[in-house]
Structure formats: C-alpha cells, structure tokens
Amino acid sequence: MAELNIFHDPVGHTLTVWFGAPQSKYVCAKTGDEVILMKDRQGHVIGFERINYQGAGDQPIRIAFETISSAA
Image 1 (cartoon, rainbow, N blue to C red):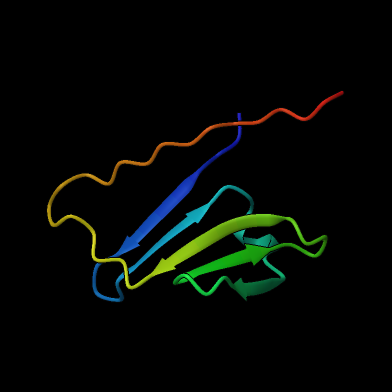
Image 2: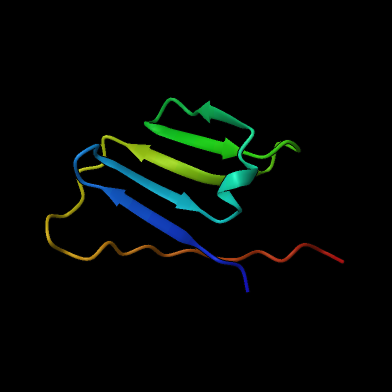
C-alpha cells in the first residue's frame, strides 16, 4: 500500500501532499492555479502544494482520492 503524507502549514498558508518519496523531488512546476507540482527525475508527479490555502479553521481537512490501476 502506498503512503500518503499531508502537511498543513497554517502560518505559511500551504497544504502539501506527497504520494511519492519527498527526497525524490527533482523539479517543481507551477500550474497557474496556486498549485505547484513536485516531480521526480522521470517527470512523474510525486506531490503537490496548494499555496494560499486558508483551511477551515479548527475543522479536520477532508481529502478524497481515487486510485487508477494501469492496464497490464
């Protein structure tokens, strides 16, 4: 099972999500929508950061995701 790491910085107003190894980060790419994609050397997205994220105060952060299996 893959590991998902989520970090919320309420002072810096960022939400960072890693679904790959953070130490594999090679390059970052801005999307233009206040989202930065972190990629490895092969160009695979291994995480993203949402800037200017205000959160919902003291409410839990709820994240839904879906896995897609590749065709064999």
